[in-house]
Image (cartoon, rainbow, N blue to C red; front, side, top):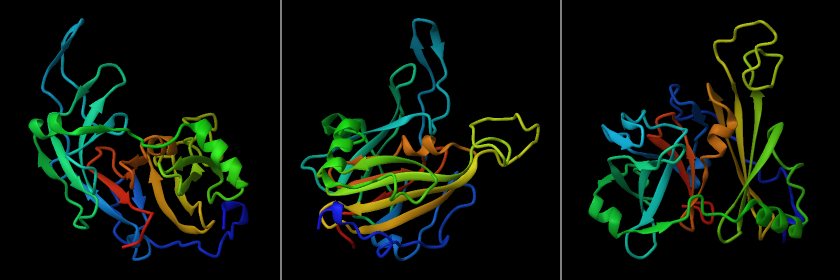
Length: 264
């Protein structure tokens, strides 16, 4: 059954906070249902930036690695469950973190191991995020007869993520307050003259559909605080052919890694 024949709601899975860390800006709800598809991937030593870099303006000290920056991925040898990952700054300059990791998506312990410059240089670059363009996504969804705007769980959105094989569609939406006052949903709005020390806060939703069967596999939910939803949504995506990543903390030391094409 194609997505034009959706059954919405029957396959909805929601769950309560299990292993969320209160210090994370994204507190993912993760229980046994979600663990059929996802686990937390950790980069245990964090990300180290070079001590000094030079450009036309002279030497400078790179800022701390965090959500504004991105990852770059490579695969060692034949593409499988393992991939290399490294932090990269592309906003002003292009430079990399000093350290590199190798992650194995099939390893449920979820701890990436340190890798080397030699392994990185020998690896094959892979796209990030590995998805079709926005126009291709919309044309594909239209061909399925799927009204994605009506099938999102959050009030705002959705953004769209489509797997390289076009078999998994994820709707990214949110509910909450983006301004500093409860009556405003405008980022940074202080027109109400109040002070809300929480800043932006609310819930994120990731509605995951199988495009071949029309079945909703799961709805992942998370609380967010102190960031805007797009800070997270723009850093999610598919890496290689199979894994979907969601950042969880501002320092990019943890992410949720999911494989929706099959359950464990």
